[in-house]
Length: 260
Image 1 (tube, rainbow, N blue to C red):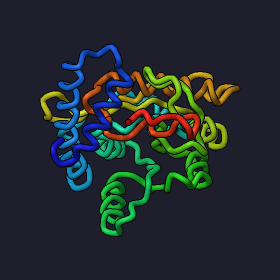
Image 2: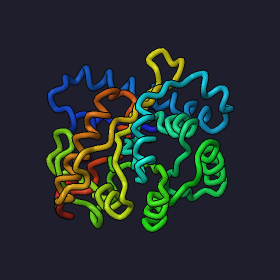
Image 3: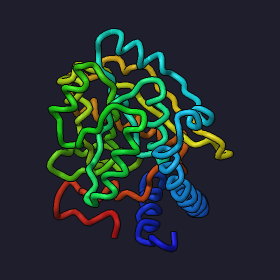
Image 4: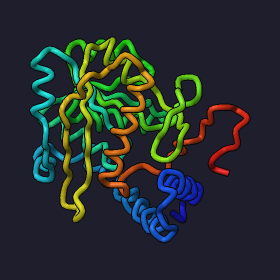
């Protein structure tokens, strides 16, 4: 918190916006806990990228993999609907122990970091697809394959609709899950990962495929997606990436920033 004070300020503001009824003392406790978890996430990433498969298997539990297998057996791709929780790197590595998949990611500007993250993320998975390469995502789903997909961050005004997220009524939200599910002829399965409270291992849970998704209206799909994201985050608030400026894009360019 001392090293990246601006991020601490962002995280505090996000908590205030999302949980306006939470007492200030609880906000500060959650903020401190969140930055402790953020520090641990550095080691989660190192574990995910460099631990052997044998060691991974000693520190993991998986629930719901049958939902993934059933969807693939039915000839449909799987969209793991995840959020930017802090142990997400480990979640992907654990998942790959029984069903290697395809990750959607943002290529790093630094060549060394790009090399490390690609090498680390491919330890137990098939491939990585840049987040703007829709064609490759669709091709992967139709194979069929499994891909990770996140819709919980602010990607700007051009690709967003403005709908509720927790207690913010107009959060910029992408509708890509609807597009991917339609074009990829895929099912959407919520995906949850957390580090144990005693830091001895990691748990992931895959929920059954969503019924009637995509629906007839991408806005309603996105609202449904945000509710699922809220439920996943609420299972372990301290392990969510609150330091992202989730509400930086406002419906109108003239709107006052929520971070001032």
